[in-house]
Image (cartoon, rainbow, N blue to C red; front, side, top):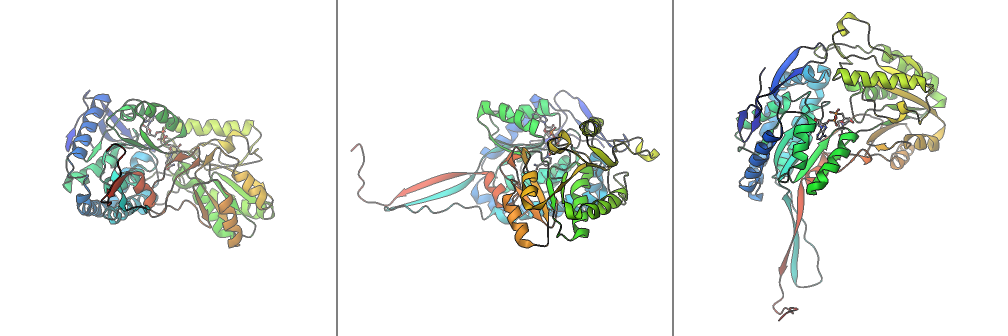
Length: 490
Ligand code: NAD
């Protein structure tokens, strides 16, 4: 498959005519070829988005019902094409088809529907003043939004940004990950087919250092919405300072998953497995630190290890695959590095800890689900985001120790609590320094509920009404109602 970029309503090659191959990380096959953009292409895309925003026929509040209708149609088009889109997503990202078919594409469609419903209801508030005047606020779109997304949920994480930004009347330049740009381009095809005005939604494919940085430093881009690693987030903040860019960041995590002795053990084991190994651990909210109360340590470990051993590693397009391929050789080496270091720092590997031996896995970036014990809570394997199928198990005694261990992290994205004592669950949820806490569930995102990080996991929120507000700015309007006004200069 051969794609162009979508800029100003046209499918174009890059100015340099350079192209990039998109490789399936499970077998090395070429899935597609896309343009490799650089600064010049970003200029064109931002100019198109700027012109579309300034023309006012998309961004005006009068157009809210039209935007709502279009976003609802985008959702419908995604749902109609779910099988093909899920396949493309799995092929380029390495993640199991079970996940992309059942979760990713549908949740992306949910997101467009949800913000379609909210588009016509974006309003300000009346401000009470103790004088004869009417004061009220308006929520207006910000302008051109540069969006930069990672490889692990390519279409879904784009939808988390594109849907609320468009609903609020902004225009968009989206830079997908260099590994997984296909479904962003497919989304552009949907927008084109539905008759979205030229320049409202643009996709530029290329690398972070060139395309990403050109977006972040461009003075006609009003806001950057970024999802990716903390390291890149830091760089974006530095670069964005030059033009005082509005920035939201969705960064990494090291999710604590607390299992109290009074939990429903079977449910907790299933939830902990999903939290740890979904999308082969390449999940920002992954529950990679499993904290288990000592009284059930043996029972939990036995069940968890038995179930881990049954997980099927395989090609992302096989329906029985539980653990697919990591995105790249570099990512695989990073996982190996952390596992080696974990062992050197005194940790013991109870299962996994290596690439699988099977011949089918030989051509891809696969790694076995890996369970560490006897690790210090301050060891790197317990503190650093590995972004692979690697978990550490830590024992604890009582609520105090559980909360202290869980909060011992510079990250604060998401975590879980397993208990049948709802008061204990709520107490613990309040004490965790996390943007999301699940009680008796894990890895569950709903478009209605805000999502984002405490601490070094980011700033701003995705999803919910909160994300919509993050794509607006507040204008205050004062209307004088006094007949006699005392002016300072008469
Ligand atoms: P990454 O930071 O390497 O890349 C993310 C995106 O940023 C890519 O599109 C990349 O091309 C671009 N980029 C890289 N360097 C850049 C630069 N200097 N300037 C501008 N853009 C640049 O992250 P990744 O490896 O693709 O994804 C994994 C990371 O994303 C993990 O840390 C994970 O936790 C995080 N993540 C966070 C969330 C969340 O919602 N909090 C969700 C998914 C992934």
